[in-house]
Length: 388
Image 1 (cartoon, rainbow, N blue to C red):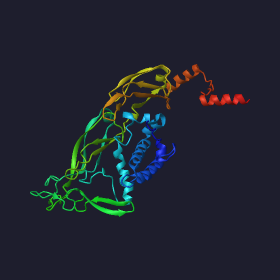
Image 2: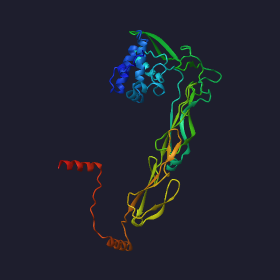
Image 3: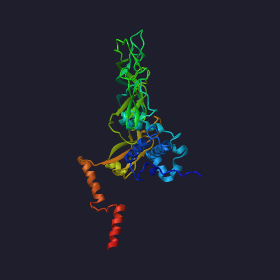
């Protein structure tokens, strides 16, 4: 008869309302107690697997939500991906193992990352574009400094005609190991080789240009494609264009930070472009047709008679392209035209005479307006009526 799966919260000994910190703390304590290298009990390995399975699910918000709703059915199979044997993502526990086992002499899990040549660091460059360029995209040249492979030694650090040799202290592993006795038994301390710095190789005759570093600072000019629809502060990643890594290690990346200049008339709200347009009282009262600017050139706007301040006209498809995470676009926003009726502050004699005639025909009565009540106001009136 199949055994019923244990409740993950019970496995970790936490409540169903436990936060991430509490779950992580409980996991660390139990993993230290039941790790097969430490606990020699017959069922220690099985218990350790259950602890890891429980933590993998409860430490992930999406998996935890499915588990709370559907139980094991929500996390098993392709949708769940949980479970110690064969479960994807188990390697994510390596850092936790290294962290808490380091307190017992620096031991790490057998699958921990091997020390070796260091990857290159990332670099940043800033570029400024116009408002129109942010809408349609543009290719821009950016200038920045980075550490590049030395031209003389091609990044090896060794003088021309010589080659790096395997480190005699670590035998090319980049690591040195030392066994220490602790109350839990013998523990292996692993550290970066002090002689080669983790590279696994040493240079007997350093390159005179880079002094054995294998890298030198260079000023670089690089063409970068800015996609349509970018906004202020967007970072564009250019892979492999950062600092060069150690010999045999990948280069870092370049992050281009985009700055968009303010426009004289347009402003942006999400994927829409906002334009404020002032019309005089005659245009607002009688209606008019006139050209207005868009990022693609002028178009005619028809303002109907009786247009009031605050009226919004929508020009569909005249806004900002919707930029996807992969750099492609999906449609465009709109241009919103906000009307402001401008009342003249200075009138000549003829204009004043005409306005006086208009005022006489319209009358001078002022009618108080009832406020437009919202849902909350109507609810308060209803409650007050019940109490009376």
